[in-house]
Length: 224
Image (cartoon, rainbow, N blue to C red; front, side):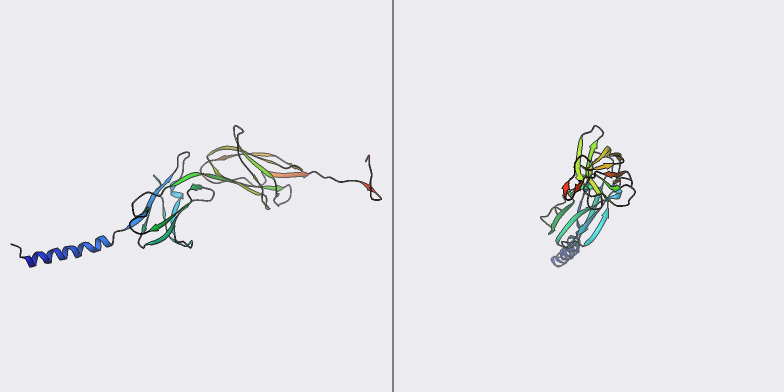
């Protein structure tokens, strides 16, 4: 028969043994990389946990089979969860703020934090023929195979342009300028499972319109 003293001692030891297990419960942020419209290699995507200043604390790979990830959280505080994809891959959202308190936040409640894949990227460069310099201010259009307009942009100071997010498929890139001529004004491209870069020399300016006037003693000289 158990005495009151022995029973009290057993209960006390049991409660002490349970305290560390409860106190050491590991919380974490988890979820999925989701994609509905094209094949995606989930193993190339990582998810990182950052502090509010932007320093990476920990990162993890995603499951190749279903895109699942999990990052453990040990200390309460403010964090930012970010998807880390290869260049040119677009996701929404790109990051999610987390105020981890062990009780009320999305991670403590065991809810999924998902990142939705939106598309890949297309980058290229318009160059001056026989010169290794970019052509600034060229209008660039991206169209589908059926000639539907997908997007439009203008080349930067280095002649570079980009489109994102873009789904897998075949597209046509067209370039134009009011006063410039091109060796080939369009280029066909196929986007598969990653960022697509247009090969160098595919889009080149071949010549320029030249305007001027003929004068004689400072006066316009006609019929020339």
